[in-house]
Image 1 (cartoon, rainbow, N blue to C red):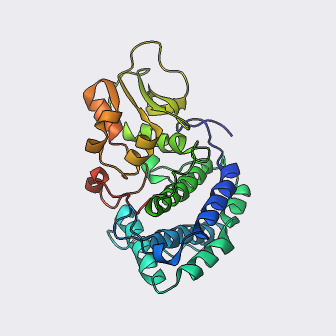
Image 2: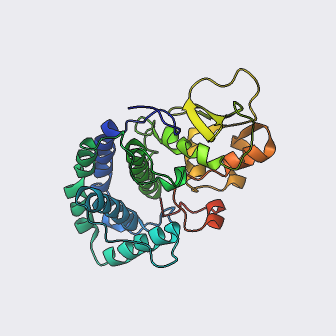
Image 3: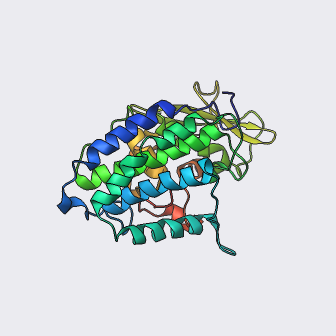
Amino acid sequence: MSPTRWGPPIDVLPLFTQEEQALGDLLVAVPAEDWRRPTACPGWSVQDVASHILDGKLRRLARDRDAVRTLQPGPGEQLGRFVDRINEEWVQVSRRLSFEIITTMLFDFLGQTAEWWAMVDLEEMGDPVSWAGPEPAPAWLDAARDYTEAWVHHQQIREALGYPVLTFELGMTIADTFMRALPYTLRDVDARVGRQIVYKVTGEGGGKWTAWREPDGWTIDRGAGPSRAPVASVTTDIDTFWRLVTRNVLLADVTDKIKTTGDENVCAKMLGMVSIIVPDPKESKARGGLRSV
């Protein structure tokens, strides 16, 4: 796979099966009294989040494998609001079902998403990944987005049940995927061509990412930083990073875990990065494990 302005390709295909197996092992162990436990998703229980994971798999297969694209935003409806609405509609209907029915359906479809992605030319340009930019994106980025959605919701279920954090062996691509929102996040930051910005994530699954200013915008790569001081630099740990960009935590609550240097305004832009779909830009600053991942 060839590099793009979103950086080098990410191969998540080997991880889909591992993540789904871990999710399946978790769900079969959930006692009935825990189905209604609240999660970080506002108003959603463990059962609701499991149902939402199922919905995501069904919609992906119906839309892209089976070419059924009947769901569309209403007149004047923004993408974030549209996604939030159809997510909530599904969860409301699925509350008529038992946890056993939802998990049985989910088990039936585990593996089918990975099988479909394995047949896709991941270098082809496809639908936009909205938080990485409005233009068509390479299929590998869409596949990585698919994986991160399942991973985040899996994590929310684990936390609601009091289970240990999902190992970052399966999360090693999470920071790398979410970081691909950085060029779009910096789109309004003006700088001379060649100037650089650095975002470091410490811990297992972390790394260092450098964004370069080019004549037509910003691009990103993973690896060594600049030979001279960057315009701005942000450093935080992997757990804080994924929660921050998915709005599972308030920035004000984790400032002690973040180090910034350089241009304060650019650092603020970087810390405002959102790697999920949000119903409204104003809500991107709010906590809540937003449901429109």
